[in-house]
Length: 110
Image 1 (cartoon, rainbow, N blue to C red):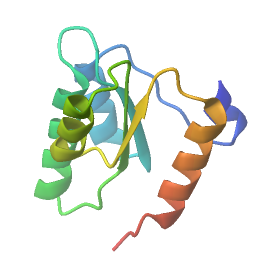
Image 2: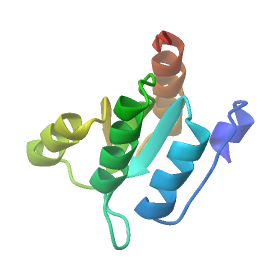
Image 3: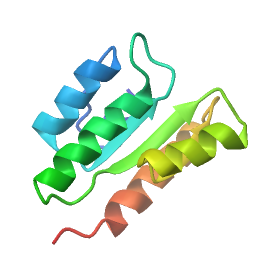
Image 4: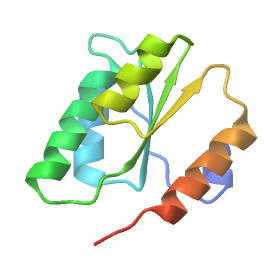
């Protein structure tokens, strides 16, 4: 996997419920989430994660929304729900790696 080749530890899950649980358990530096997931969408995942971070007074993970929808509606909702970054598919691998490196490097942990 591309991110593992770059030295990242990757936890991949099939749906939003498992993704939310994995993010809460692992408290990753970054979360990359497709908005169109089976059963519950990526907005559910980010809501659960942000709620956990706020309640636990934890620093927010960098969150990147991926989608095939390029309209402003999805971009604005993504940012409003708690994603800091928004990428439209197909994503260029180098751009994704650079975004993660820059965002995680700039992440302030208090």
